[in-house]
Image (tube, rainbow, N blue to C red; front, side):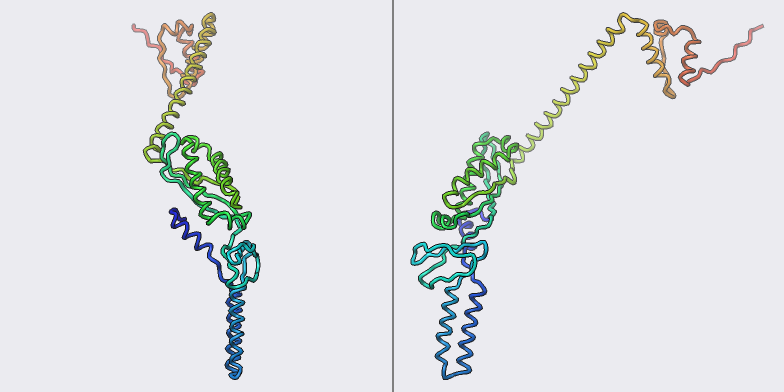
Length: 314
């Protein structure tokens, strides 16, 4: 898609050139063939080939064909005569002139804004696409010199203006709102030209590489902060649970001993596990004698091997 004014004018001028329909060439060729046949078969009537050729030239210049989606703007001696098409129609050569072929289909126009500063002074490159159509061919032909070029520049100007009034965060998060606002601004400009804007879509927003790295580091730091906050909240909940448990065991030593015995049992029942319990802790928990320990080990599947009694010395 062209971006400079000269390229845009050349691009749209090439698209707006009147096209030659095969029917015109067929009629002209037929008339010349008839004239040539008369001149060859009836040499004495060779002069009859001249009016036949003139008729062919007249039809070739008068016959025009517009496609189903086109309207032809006809001027007669410089004044607006009317719109013709779709289909075939005739004009008066030399007197009438088809100046424009207006396309009534939806047209897509790609436009962009490069190195444009946002409201928080961040240079961005924005690419967008515009969907528009001509609803009044007469206004599009008479109210503006080149309506295609006018739509292009209006869209680009509106994009630059809205970027300057928007922060980078708003632009990245609220593309739909920007699309709607762009559509409204451009449509207000193009409505007097008989053109309506159906939609505008921002395709891409490019920011400097250094700023991308800074935003990435900022997002990572924010995630780490959030993770630490969650971990701190979890630690606080755990500590509060321990406080509540301590209050429950404070005035109930039996419950505390049962909890200690359960913890010791859970540790001993794991295969290959070994735990050393100080004698003071055993006395405190009321585990008592070696018999109690053996019974506890037997329940946990660890079994204590019995040693044979030593024989008394004589």
